[in-house]
View 1: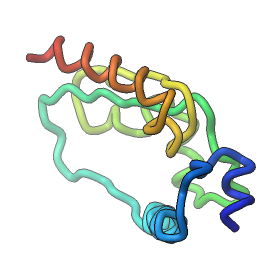
View 2: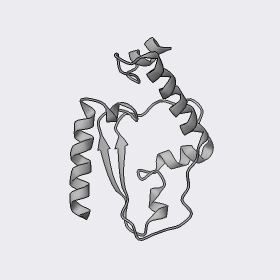
View 3: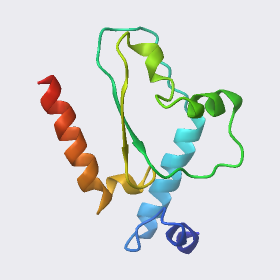
View 4: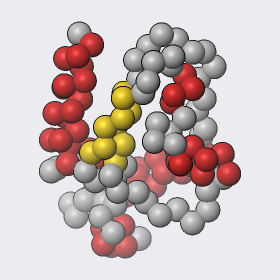
Amino acid sequence: MKEQLQKVNLLSPSAGVTQVRGQIEVWKASFLTYYAPTEVRKTPITLFRAREFHSVKMLPDELSEILQDPTWGWNKFSPDPVEVHFVPGNHETMMTNPHVQVLAERLGVSLDQII
């Protein structure tokens, strides 16, 4: 399993067994959890989306609909437009080198605008 995940760049080459197990648990929890805030607040929302997308063969209908929306449904929870930033990598690799540098830079710019 580890080798297959590394071949498709879903896991760092230096990842150990503990990291593999942890990552699998995160994926399982992500697929089993559907988070939907109940209140709309006057809060700016910034979404950092990965440019690459995992091909998932079976998605629940509601997730398929959300993925068609560039804001992934977050526009329903703020009266202001959602600021969307696409960053290199996929959901996991966007937070590892070298992609994390771009994510950090864009996050810093976003924070500077609201502080």
